[in-house]
Image (cartoon, rainbow, N blue to C red; front, top):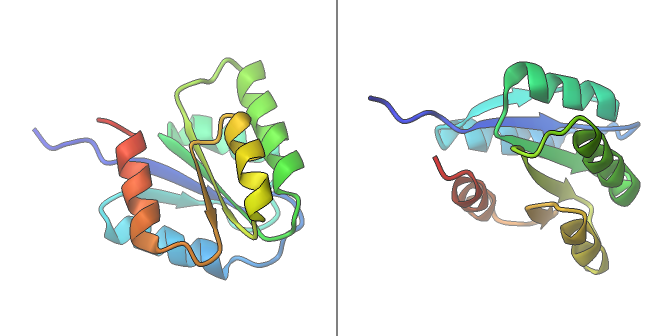
Length: 132
C-alpha cells in the first residue's frame, strides 16, 4: 500500500502582494513528493481555514512578507481553536525577525522559516512534523 502523501496548504494571508517565495516553496514541496494547494494572494484567515478543512490538509503554511505575521498567525490559531481543529501543523515563513520566532512558537507554530532558510530545511521540518 502506498504511503499517504503529506498534504500542504501554502497560504498568502492579508494584503501582502509578494508571492514569488510562496510559489518557490510550493514547487519544492511538490518536487519532494507532497501534495500542495496554493491559495493565491489576499486570502482572509477564514478563507484559509475553510480551504484547509475542505482539502483536509496536514499542514498550513503561511507566507507573510508584510510584517503582520504576529496578528495574522494569532488570528489563525484562534480560529482553529474556536473550530476545535488540532490536527493541522502550522508553519510560518517570510520576513520574520528573529525576535518574533519565540512568540510564534508560543502560539503553537510548529516551524518558523525566515527568508533565506534552505528549502531542504523546510522540507525536512514538515516531514518530521507529519509522522504518517
